Length: 106
Image 1: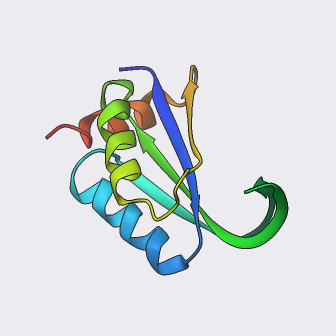
Image 2 (image 1 turned 120 degrees about the vertical axis):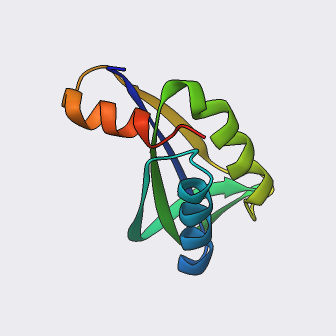
């Protein structure tokens, strides 16, 4: 397996980010998840501009696990309309890609 996918989301609390990360890795939907420090997001919501502090979570997974991972994130996410972005990494270290694939097998 030469490709990996990166799924990214943001949430409003570090504790929520940690739970999403741990659940995905424990369920083998992601080989690893990284919780990033606070970011300030500015966005449109309900006809107005809002700014809030959020925590980012990046999940590294195999392409064949993306749909299940996104479904789990969506089901557990506290936002009404969560940001869930999927990127396919077309090149990277082959050993890392193999590790990701191996650790996303049920």
